[in-house]
Length: 377
Ligand SMILES: *Cc1c(COP(=O)(O)O)cnc(C)c1O
Image (cartoon, rainbow, N blue to C red; front, top):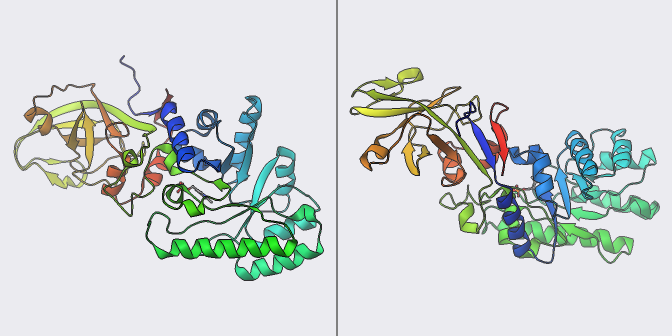
């Protein structure tokens, strides 16, 4: 059906559920914390949460995201805990967490102090730094906190102890084993000093779920793999989600809005940076960086039209890209204005595009703008 909508992100909820089942298959004994921060990696957090209701809990980065999600979950009677991966940024926000039954991560002594001084008790997850050196308690911080714990109420103990890998996408990187070892040591220290058998633990993101079963522990935290994307795309560029038995969730497409016959030597687009080496048929597609298509995608980046890959030529503009339609002609595949062009998704793995554009699929997904119409199937 012809609509006025050109750029469109079609979200396949069955693929999302398939990918969650794939997580379950990789980590069958473990609870699943589905990571749906940043609007579910650009897919639409509310729709994604509903489709992933077989998860054990959800994670977002910040309080504002959690409040929107919690409201929706309550309205739809979906009972799931929501974890705040960055915790709170001021003491007062703990009241909100408590009122809304959100579970913050505590990753610094300041955050712990705010909680303790506010007199508020709530479930929280404690993050320790095992080598990422971004968020999390250092060994010294932990030692300090353990001393505190010995003097205060058991209500202030964490529910789960977590850490995060810095290089999990590089399967053979020795940092991974170092971090796992450090994590086990630190969390054991915490547990034994308090006379608890052990805390629940969580460490694995998508890459570790697929490659380090010794890091599965009690909770796994899949993000990118839920959306059908290989977590190994930077380390192993030839691999994509299909190699991991994942299915792409988002298919981004738009429409062929003009077809032109250009002469050898004619140059295309801003900066006239790409010139026809011969007489050519060029297609104009209604999508650009104003929709979130990466401006850095170079000539040669594939676009899928009528099941055939054709190369981008010339610069990406705000509202348009241009492609060489020669391959369609050569293979006698008919095309016309109004045909849909797939930028990534079904038939064209996003990993191919992120690699060409010198970025990662995570960024491409998060960059999609409001002009793109989201549809769910
Ligand atoms: C974003 C995030 C994840 C998910 O990572 P993926 O690589 O997308 O699987 C897991 N844990 C934490 C703490 C995160 O911030």
